[in-house]
Length: 300
Ligand code: GUN
Image (cartoon, rainbow, N blue to C red; front, side, top):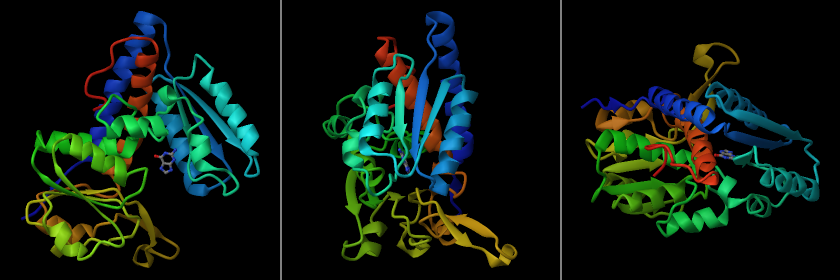
């Protein structure tokens, strides 16, 4: 069997188109422009790339983009002051503080100081609780993107066995909640899981989110299963020339694609969906803030 490749890049472009249409309507019918503020503290090179990309795509769909780049040694008081200002700014509907933060800043405190209604990352403790109890919330972008692709590929996920490898607050835990919400039987596996290969072999859906390059080989995959690869790992690629690098996921693509029914590639799978879902969450937050109907199909 050769797996169907789930094209996250094309799917993300369709999500962005939907967002752009809705933004156009908000502007034309209500004079409202959704606004997203992104806060970056320090100089982490990967974070700088993400933040630039987020800003560019925000503008491309017609929204207002505001970037706050703060020094590495910014104090907690100053950062909380900025978040308070953004919480109270009526032109800002979404706030994202790029993680990781420098070590002297308390990540939980900072995230929980964002107004839950503007928490387009879905990381605030209120949104985590709402998602866990099946109530309307802001849903974390990467798991939301994974779920959109799974729903599009399968339709109903009801009764399927799903294994999420990784228990992070950003991906693993919210992904498990979303799959539970779709009536999957969900297992969260992690570094201490006994007999991981056998656990993964039972799954109709495998979501790999561990941050370990090519950790999942094809012989762990049940024939016909759907594999969603959240990993983005940069490796040296001397075969491409001196100093060259390549991106690989958390699954060994070539061996898994021979066994799976469907698989997301890296790059071009989950990655593009994450930013598309951030834009979708910002429009959703803007509609909720203004008591307007939410766009269909852009959240759970
Ligand atoms: N760092 C890595 N992924 C994310 C994300 O989804 N949101 C934020 N805020 N920071 C991140």
